[in-house]
Amino acid sequence: MQITQQQQGLMVDGSLMRLHVAQPKAEGRYPGVVFFSDIYQLGEPMQRLANRLAGYGYVVAAPEIFHRLERPGTVMEPGGVGRLRGNADAKATPVAAYDADARAVLDWLGEQPSVDGQRLISFGFCLGGHLALRAALDGRIKAAVCCYPTGLQNGVLGADRADTLERLGEIAAAVFTVFGSLDPHVSPEALQQVLSAFDASGLNHCTTLYEADHTFMRDDGPRWDPQAADQAWSAAMQFLADQPSGNSRLVSSSASTS
Image 1: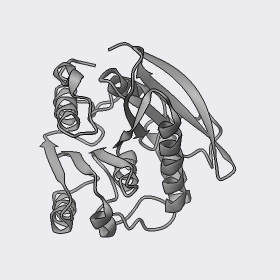
Image 2 (image 1 turned 90 degrees about the vertical axis):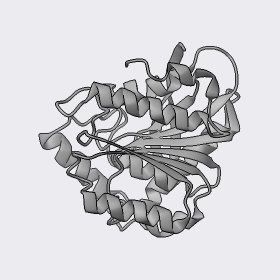
Image 3 (image 1 turned 180 degrees about the horizontal axis):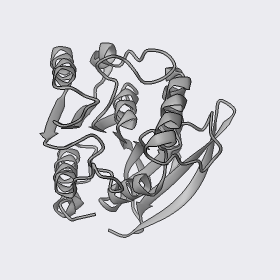
């Protein structure tokens, strides 16, 4: 499905938050997605992921998660100083600020004529995977896709400890998680801790595990695994298609390569 792209700006707590917005070119009303990047913000690899999702029939709004600390348009390069800077920004951002950003994007999506406000979804990668799960604490979210989310097991997310696992019982959304067995950020013990918490809370969830490294769906580095990434995309799109909030019309195309 062809898409269009544009930039939008929202004011949140007195700070300008830039949104990368991608949506189907064809007129209609589609599910809306709040899309969270990794710590490097919205560089080309993350925009490609957001754009790919839009091509399956979703209106995707991706905020700059560190807008309170960085100028609009700032992108950190993976590795080295970029990783240090992204992690420093993450640690300097209060959890409540992340929550406020999610609410603001959901408010904006609900106002768009191209968005079905009854079908709102969260989707994210790495730190953004944690944010996508946390966004589902908002009852407007009907489904969440969390790709190799970090910090769930120990509450590491921002300037203060995130109580995400303790609040799983508040989440009514269906949750899909993607993990890599070679991910150094989520050890087998940590993964078991997270999945046990999911089960104990009664969360409606589905988890897939690939023999892949952290950030294996990002196509600009040595950890990218195209085959595993396509498999994860296919599984995630099928999961969303199976939800009332998803778009079942385009699920057959989800196995195509990026």
